[in-house]
Every structure is written in C-alpha cells, then in structure tokens.
Length: 265
Image 1 (cartoon, rainbow, N blue to C red):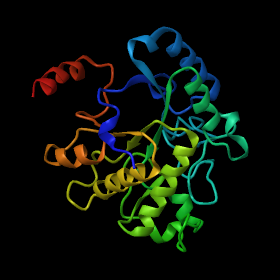
Image 2: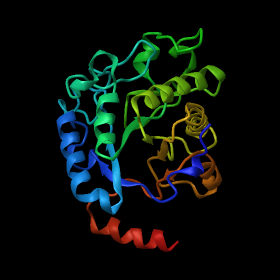
Image 3: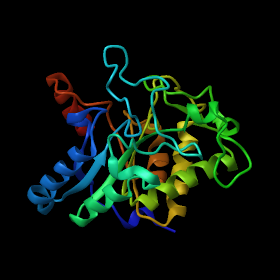
C-alpha cells in the first residue's frame, strides 16, 4: 500500500489545461504543452501535465451561449459507469486504451500526468442502472441524488457504503492502469450548497484516499474548490496531498490583494 507521505513532499508544479483551453482541450494541444514543459521548464521543477474538466465530453464548449457544462451531453462512459476520454478529442484513447497512451507520452518526456475529476458517480450511469465493478449492485443503488454539485450537472454523490467504496476502488484502479500521477478532484473540498456534516464530500474524500492507497500507485490527490474549512484541517491532512485556501483565482487585482491577507493568516 502507498504511503501518501512518501511523495509530493513539496508543492507539485506543472501545467493545467483549464487556464487556457477551458473545457475543450485536445490531445494535440496537451502534447504540445507537454513538449514545451519538458524542454523549457522541467529543469526548474515543473513536471505535472494535467488535463482539466470535461475530458470525457465530445461536445464540450459547443453550447457556450447556454451552458458552461452541458446537462446530459454527449459524454463517453464505460460499461461500469466510469467516464472515459472523448475519442474525438483524444484519439489515442480509442479501443479502451483510456489515457494510457497520453500518459506514456508525458512519462517518456520525464514528466508526470494528471487529470481532473468531479466528486461522485455520473448521473447517466445511475439513469442507465450500469453495474458497479466487482459488486452485484448498480450505479443507481450507490448514487445519492440529494448530493449534487451546484455548478456542474454531471454527477451524483456516492453513498457511504462498501459498494460505494468499490466504485471508487474501480475508478482509481482504472486511473492507475492509465498511469495517472495526479488527480484534481472538484466539488469536494468545499460546497456552497452544503455547509454542514451532511455534505457527502467529507466521506467521499476518505473513500478516494482509501482507493488510492489500495491502488499501489503514488497518485497526488488535490482537492477543489476552496476555501478549505479550517475546522477540517486534519481531515484534509489525513486524506489528501493538496487543498485550496481560496475559491477560483481570476485575473483581478482585488483577488490578488486578498491573497496576501490569506497567506499572512
């Protein structure tokens, strides 16, 4: 089993696709940025290449006049209710390869590979009653429709049960097989919808951590969004490698100035 304190002892540094490409990044663009990172920034400690949100969406950013994230869009999903990369945007993922070929490309450059995920299980998996790998239940049995994300319509929360843990175990096992080194999990560090102990993000963080430990792979777990709850400091420390002290940081002076106050605290 992996000990999360044996790696990522300093803040991981690298490139994240969302900062420029939003939800619509392609494999060609990821490779081009990985090439640049390896050539110009790797020697300075920048090593992670992270594909951010909606990599499973074939139609991401095609309805921007209506949606940031298209409800029940044209998403790729496997037979066990797990999102897989869009083959139209990531051609090397065809035939069940997933992100293995793209992660190999990054690893061959001496870099590490990461992905963004949303907390929970796809709503479409529950709607279709897709089986949960290694169990005799379906996604509908472990999905919690009362636990949702306020800004992304893709997921339901996962119930705190052994079958729910089995889902996360299978998810992380698949990512480990792909060669994933970094996971940015969203809608899990904080939620403006749920402010008390009923927020399933708390137990889902623990489930993710357990799954990573079982996988045997050193995978950095980064929790988003922020701000983190000060009273949950030990919870974050016990189950993750990174967490956010603020919400999204945009190019506004007032947000930059606020960072000095936060870091001073």
